[in-house]
Amino acid sequence: MGRSDVWLGLGLLHTPFHPFSSTTQLRSGTVPDTPNMSRSRGVSAKLSKHCCITAEQEGNAVEAKLNNKGVGQCKFVLCDVSNESQVKRVIETAIELYGQLDCLINNAGTHPPHLPIDGYSGEDFHNIIGINVFSIFSACKFALPHLRKTQGNIINNCSLVADIGQLHAVTYCASKGAILSMTKALAIDEACHNVRVNSFAPSNVFTPLWEKAALASSDYNAAIQTGKDSQLLGRFGTMEEVGLVCLFLAADATFCTGININVSGGAELDYGKKSRIEASKAE
Image 1 (cartoon, rainbow, N blue to C red):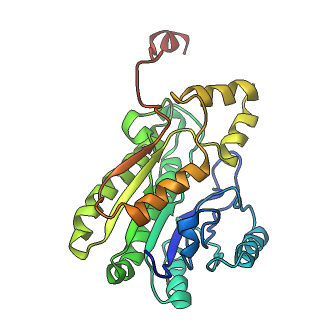
Image 2: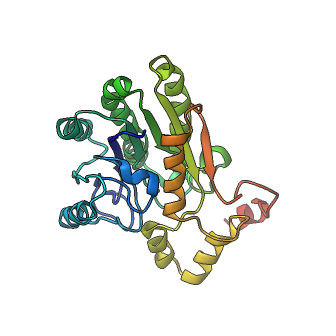
């Protein structure tokens, strides 16, 4: 990955059915403030402290800001990741601009409100599959002809709950479980082309979406503390820490394919207060 590489990432900022969201968008460009990434050119995208795009105008402003840094190039493209034709257009735009593709980061995803299965409609389930799963299918499908030429790699945003589950989140957990299985299956298929496919699984990472969820709760401070206490390390992860894991998978983990890295602060370890017996009586 030492030459001028082209990295493309689909990053979801807002979704139609999320309680505090409105539209789906993509920001593409080199990832700032990561030394080894500053060599990358073209389309790489993830949420970072520099990127929380809520409108096309803001996306264009981020593009200009990153290009003014003078390290690589950035291109913002508006995209509904649940729309196959729009995802295809994003891939085509990257190739038209830069002629190649070296890394695809599928970072689009959403989490609906916590409800028992009875609280979700069939349409709700289709919506989350469209954003969390179908977007990855589409992006991989259209990117792989180009990634095979460069022997590039794919990185999928999974979730810790794909392994451990989550209360009142059956649709979300199902979507993340699908991503985990897709990653492994695709790693098998693409090994013959020397294309690596991996995923990362965050626990509680403090994002603007997480903060808005806390603000929407009855007790902001209690929600934040609960989020912190879920990790053995006693804090939220940061978006920069997740970005560094992606950097490792993309540039250094050259003998890794089909793996899923927990970015979790130890949230999956040890026993905890998990009994749902009393809760079920209350419900």
